[in-house]
Length: 146
Image 1 (tube, one colour):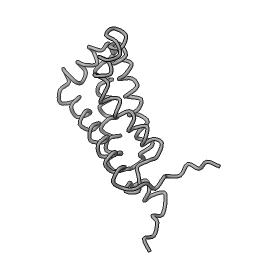
Image 2: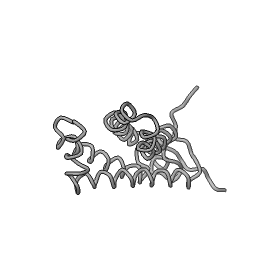
Image 3: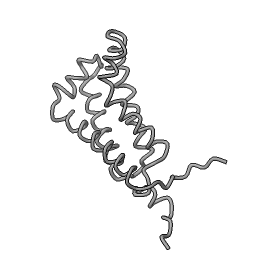
């Protein structure tokens, strides 16, 4: 019978993954507010979003909040979900048109960072934040070192 428990993984790899993904999303969210013309509402308008001010701020807010949760390892799996949705929308709104109009290799070049972030988010969604996360401290007793 499959259980939905948090997997106790070695601390360093999952800690580094959480920090990497969390910091990238926090940084990207903050930049949407700092540079709205190029990375926030201006970018969303350029892509073709209706109500670009709303969607840029909405996306930036989720990137910052979920990114902070990943840094802490708090509700790691839940925090990965909105970020995965952001990545899927980003693919279809920015990378898929490159695939259609320019081909696979130009798209692969542009998608490399998004691809890595998406794979790492899937890993965090599947396995949780590791044994150095708040999740493990809240939901499971840590193994005794005796």
